[in-house]
Image (cartoon, rainbow, N blue to C red; front, side):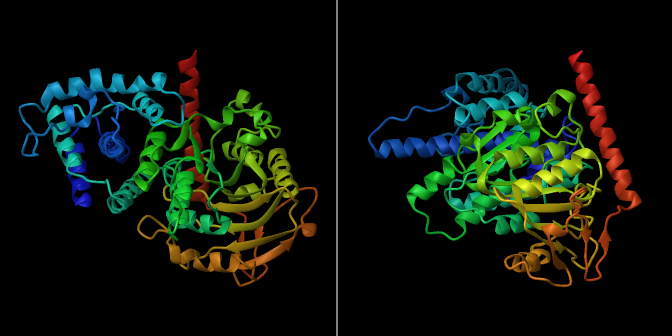
Length: 484
């Protein structure tokens, strides 16, 4: 039922002049799904209060509740066409009344960790792009037919929503911003092994894939106590996201996975000065795929001891600082980080090796990230003691990866298995920290077992990265012009 409903919604959105890409389809579906979810949440809370003999005061005023404007029902439980808005009446209500009302919650909320604040933030960041009130009515009717009150229903819907995010991630060259392949995330989670009570953080959370997969990992075994479930709801998952669309999708994705009021903050993480991070701000686990290829402004670079315009290098410093002593990290980064000779790269490798135990490096093949022509590695480390030995694994699925042939869980099984003991194999080997050049701290992937030496990129990879950097530069210039 859910799958067909999603297809029907996309079919209607394709007729809309204001919706031209997978990004638009996902965004517009998201805000409507969110309001439908909120309606169900309010009904559940009202029912719970009733059982306790209490009266529930709704979050939304009556005219703005789903049951009032989107799906008013008659006595027979079907849509009351005499009351339901449609055509221009519907679009005018949504644009001129509903969105401003919902955005106002941000000012009225008691704090950023409340559902009220999330409502205000979401509806201040996105706009209704569905210009036809008749199309909007059709989409609302499809969404109203969805039921995701039970865990089973949420689980099914979350899988479909993930598929939409994947399609969105594959839609453009910068798809990696929105979508990290889930098999890679699951392998990273298995290596880092989060546990109940850990505070898990992603400061560049995109669509919240790392946080959602961590939640699934922690709940998969079952047998959790009420206290455990409460801990997972409010004191486990923390994220920050700069881009508006990704922020909205992250919130919706976490809600569908079972987190009622996700601790996701809409902010540019890198504007935070590293010197201001206190012990209370630190986390037990960091899992992230920060954006790479970006260029941060000079005033942002001032927040970091190792100054560089490379976004991913700034994020890596942020993540190391954000971990508690003994905290574990799994971070995706460009493979050129391992061998670049510029001062920032050398200094950052030195910092990582001396302040953390970099115990594992996973070398990913080209094509791991759809639409991003950059080769990557995953760094696994524990903070608080220097690196003694690094175990390298060169992932080779035995085929070319691409949109029609993506990375899967089986491709990573051997890595996860061998990583537990740091075993040598044709694809894996260890390097003693004492053997690392103390001038360059070069960590290049050099398989002593006859594997490929991964130092150079293909012309296509280089051209793709240049194009991505050109696009980023254009965005920065436009931002600067807008500030002048």
